[in-house]
Image (tube, rainbow, N blue to C red):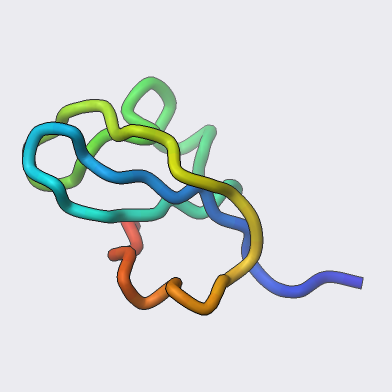
Amino acid sequence: MTWGALYFYYKCPACGKQFKYAIDLMAEFGDDFGKCPYCETMGTYVKEGARTPDDLEYEEVE
């Protein structure tokens, strides 16, 4: 059984944005997986898993 997409949640240490990447996009993004979509700084890992109660605070990178 699955609970939907799994995500890695990040916070950018440079600009403070919160964002998330779906785990299944890891191969597509390659070395850019985990980078801030705004300033391209590598994000600080926060957590991983299915959608959490604070999920809407994180912008999804597609």
